[in-house]
Image (cartoon, rainbow, N blue to C red; front, side, top):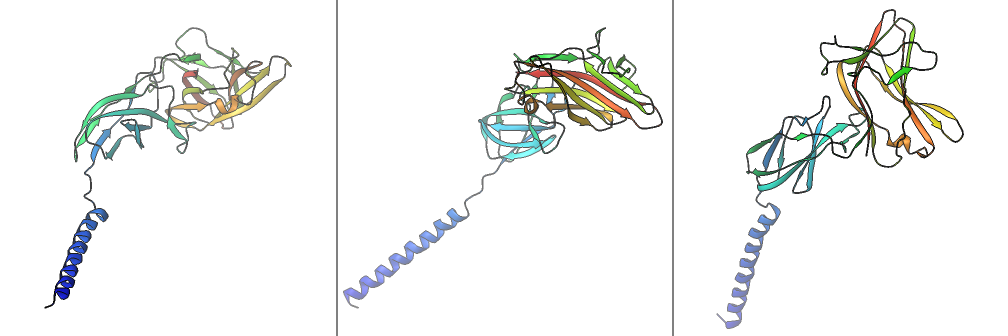
Length: 286
């Protein structure tokens, strides 16, 4: 065997060895060892207020958003060890499932959590309103005077009652609307609202018939008054709590010269008395 032939054989063996090593390592690159996730479970987010309707949790691990989850939730995360978990309470903006977001007026919950691969860690977030918010209007029907009056030629007004068995507070507002009758009320107060930042109207309701929310906008310079519908509530035999986002509507107005009143109204087309119940009304902005 010549020296040249020996060198060729050694070179071939060398490249075969390199190729095998590359293929083996390449398998690890193509099919790397999968990380075992840890799991987080959230059954509910407790809000320290009379009424709320938090539907999902926006979850961050070490300030990274890992997802938004319907409650109750059980989900994997590719983290382990001591981490910082932050949860923001999520709502259905305007009561619509596809317009979910975290509620900017609720405090985020944060805790140091020790996550273990393959194991479930249960967390129980608690929240409340942030400090420094402006509650421009609240109506809980617990005081003597009401903040509503009949609108225009309407005669019906809300009254207070303590006989609603499924209410979460001692008293709620109620109106019984007779057959072929109109119900229309407005806030006594006009409100000065900012056209920047977030503005929400929260309220709890249940109702036998559809009813509407509108507002009356008065231009203080010209005296021109405009009424606009904002939202329609559908009948519900269970209490609902809704968060109505107003900022998009307010941005159309100069807040220096415009003032806002809120109206609720309904028309009963049925041949029997129908009832609307309201509670925990809050007009909130930054």
